[in-house]
Image (cartoon, one colour):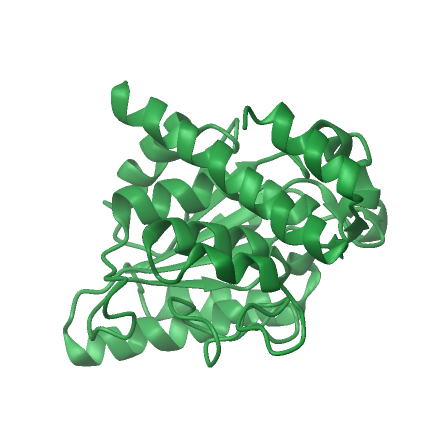
Length: 272
């Protein structure tokens, strides 16, 4: 219980740092960053074998953030882990920054793969799984996908290949917040029945009822790690979770403006 309370406090700090990054810039991907905070905190604090002092360490666990527009959340967690100084967060997407809007492995310590067009991250994660198999280093490979991203055909080609290769060291998380840049996922191009689709492609599938709960995510990952197949974890999240004025915008919070006053309001709401 004490450990989970500590994780919840870290989540508040990470949310504050997301808002500060975007607020100091004035605009950014708030909704999809805030929806994956608990997942990132649980992964890095409890499960991933990484070394902030040696970000490229051979055999480390790796995270492929395919929905790279959640970069501000990843940066906030990497900063908390000690991969770089907190002052870097003030430079998000500014000239000369090492924290671009979308994740870049050549700029940011701790980023394992540069994010290209949506849909590509899972293929890259699969390549890492195969490399790990050849190296016999027992690395666990994780990937985070957006729900709108699942409309990309490359995702399903990759899913089929991962199952064929029996990549038991691969775990994929779907940030199922039900909204994408153009509107509700169900209106743009529905992806249900989601769990049945992944199972049909030969994956084990677990669902997290509250994808913004550290305890539920922790319990689910603990079970998923034992899978002998690639495993898909569907997280029912809320886009913009934890910051009232962002949540209230719903589909309009994918990329949004944040004023100085809103930034102060959110920091106060989070208890800082």
